[in-house]
Length: 349
Image (tube, rainbow, N blue to C red; front, side, top):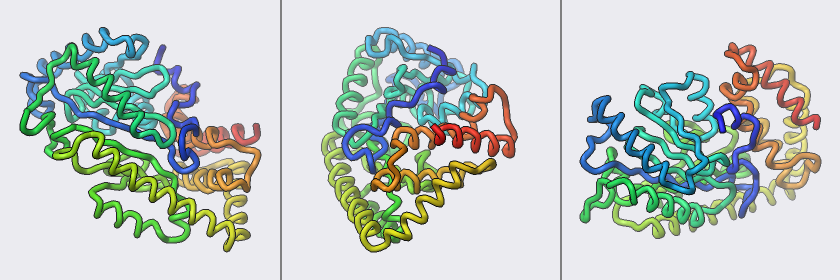
């Protein structure tokens, strides 16, 4: 498999399947790990980073689960290719910077990725569609154990897994759920929800995680604390909160459908009409309009579209994806035209 092959498939986490997929786009578990007797990334020189990369690559080769995985050295990739991986949530924005001696390992269905020499030596990520946090954790735990058979992790009996950032020390686990919450935004309840989860030691971020603002009514909610709690305890806590948020969003959607149905229909079909007919459209406008149309599908007002197609458009209309599809670099104005063309084509089918 080659990197370019990904452009022709829908990522597994975008397929709109799994529990509560009308509200929960994806569940993710990320494990931070470092190798014992190797300087952490911020202290390592280039040779030490290369040694870590080779150790991880060798460990990956022993794993049957990763037998068909794609192993990419980021230093060999173009800036568009790296941005493409960021847009597909396979690497972080930080990982793409100073890419020498960095790598990523990706399974063909994109549910597993391993970032090498990001902030920590390893960032093991499992990503699935729908509300499946516990299942995702079990997959991550099994992969972690497989790699640990061939890699000696930096671990303290007192502190747990040692990481570059103290907030990750302990389990080294960050569990997160990507939620689509348009009704809570429309009914102006979202600030109350964000305040509630902050008090419960969770954090809310945008579509691309840390440092990004929410757009398209998409919110990534994850745990803040990794020390003093087991992985299962942390996931149980997140799941309880997410179930509450799902219920709030469901109630807000029912309220809109019963009390403001005409206004909601007008907003949804105006968004649908714009997407179907626009010849120039920006990235920000696109993600906001897709969000509204997706709500229309989820509440049954739009019946000729499916959730997977709209989820795919969230990603397919991002800048690097447009340039990969075109096969060359595009200016911002050229991307706006290409984006509108793709949306019209997809929705006309």
